Length: 433
Image 1 (spheres, rainbow, N blue to C red):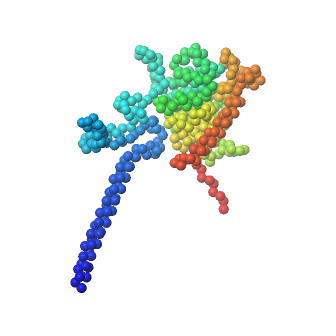
Image 2: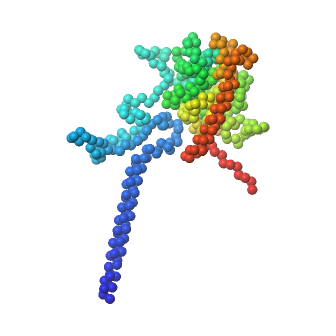
């Protein structure tokens, strides 16, 4: 009886010790998870965070790297051999390292002192010697005009360039026919940038020479065709309207009485400042107030688009390096509109242009023809001897082929990217019971 009593009297102590031991084990496990997880999180935090960047209006975010390396260094021992990594315990030194490590640097510049890193570039020309003359000093314009040009449209291009230079734009000419010297008789020739590669489109040039980091200084990028009349167009006033309306992607309206119009949404509307949609109530492809997708709304034509800096950064990535005609791109511009494409994309009616619809790429006519002769003969091109040099039908076939390739690539990318969410995806209509 006494023995059993003694055994029972020790039971509370055993339970107490068992409980304390369990608590100790649990706390140890929690601490282990905490320290291991914390170290992993600290290491990978900055590696993961770029994937969550949503503000595309910030410049250069995709070319910067913000990493916090481990605050450990290697030192040489007396034998000159690297010793194991030694953690720095000095508080002031550790604070200094953390302050420096938190700075963002362009990828590839980590080996340079911060003050020597030159992030920005522009299209301003510099003299080989001496100071910059007053006439050539940059005026820091807000826009860049880039036009693919051929010698046959020389007079038309002259009017376009003069108007944009008068409004402090930087101008680039992409010569697709190889004739550059014939432009030097214009007094503005030395003030613009000339890039010459034969038989290439403006999209080919844009992909290679208008990288977003190079043109980041300019608020708006005008990527235009050459067969446009600008008598009633004012670049600065256009930019003012675009800013007030909040348009990230836009185009000037086309004068319906003088222009070759391919899409009704581009036609100018009288007594209107800007329009963002058009209406079609008969036939196929109807457009009404409920329409939310191109070409009814959120759409511009590719002959005279204007992009904001942020929109162009997105569009440049969407331009395919090997698809030089960019057909099909117009239906997807809304993804680069920095928000609601029904609001951020529009056609400006107050500032309008004329689209002449002249033959350009694929037409190889006499290089000595003037612009006037080219315009007069363009209507009879099919029946003339120069028809032997007219490859526009082949160009159009290639454009259609590239459009099909682009669509397939887009669909494939959408299906394969599990992290991408379509902001414009429409829910399927509900079936009636």
